[in-house]
Image (cartoon, rainbow, N blue to C red; front, side, top):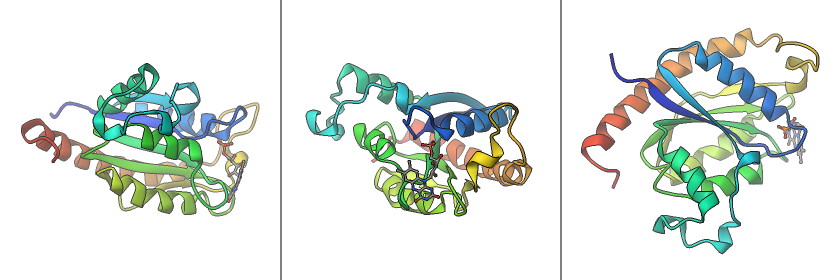
Length: 194
Ligand SMILES: Cc1cc2nc3c(=O)[nH]c(=O)nc-3n(C[C@H](O)[C@H](O)[C@H](O)COP(=O)(O)O)c2cc1C
């Protein structure tokens, strides 16, 4: 049996009262039931990322201590799950900033997008994220996980509700993510990402 896939779940929203915390908590709990994955939940709100303009070019690998701490966790992962809301038909600047903060640590890995929002379920954010991930050498899964009318699934005084259809999609996507992550990890081990 192959080693578990190390999955970094990246909570993209940094708003103080964010639904992102509910979504990433639900997704983390869901994935934790699957022994194929070891999880690191990275909340961007807790990270100390410099303005990209104040750094050396991320391709240099020279990072400030705060960015290094983030890059170390990204580098330790085989796969990513980007938990993203939709802001004005795209993903939030906080997530773009994090993606721009390091470079080599993203390369040659697999990712799935977990989006949420109103009636569109953050699908516009998810689709706009794809070319950025491609630019970082990240392979995204064909489908994505999407939660419409996000607030209705996370009542303030109780557990998440009516997420079973989303979990059905997540179940098959995790199989695909594990396949890609293992294939890429095996390749990186013998042949560094070019
Ligand atoms: C600046 C801003 C822009 C938004 N734009 C959209 C949008 O384009 N489409 C949508 O479905 N929801 C939109 N929303 C609603 C968000 O999907 C909803 O507030 C969600 O809870 C935001 O995620 P967060 O709470 O984790 O930050 C927007 C919210 C904010 C704060």
